[in-house]
Length: 187
Image (cartoon, rainbow, N blue to C red; front, side, top):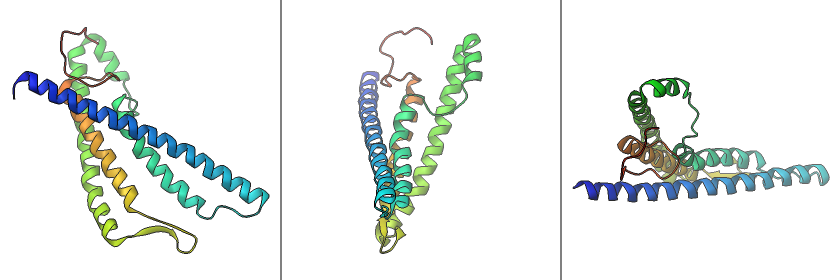
């Protein structure tokens, strides 16, 4: 594969990964809004009609995991994942090349951890898909486990792709991760 084809492939994969991450973040935001509605409905129904929303606790638990893992890839994409950059900022002023290399190592290690999460959750997803296992209280509220496990797997996999693109390209900026088409000033 020549350099031009590689750049095209990386740019295409980056556009796809960014689009999916942004879309998943939007879905996560919608889940937050739905969660607000569920909690408000439960409060009003409990306070005024003495009829709480059965399963509100289970819906909140389910939603919290969905929100975290739907928004995680976009958080990774825009470098908002919690970490201390103070040391890298100090080194970056004196030795920018070393700081870039350290960021690549951090992104690589982060990608490895996300790979471990994806590999660990896949068998659980497959087992829950086959067994139709559910959580909640039978007769009150139940939901299958497999959608949560699938979202965790897909989120971790997308994070692996995004971290991989950051390692390959050396880009850290929130805009689209892409290969360098021309000389850019050092950060």
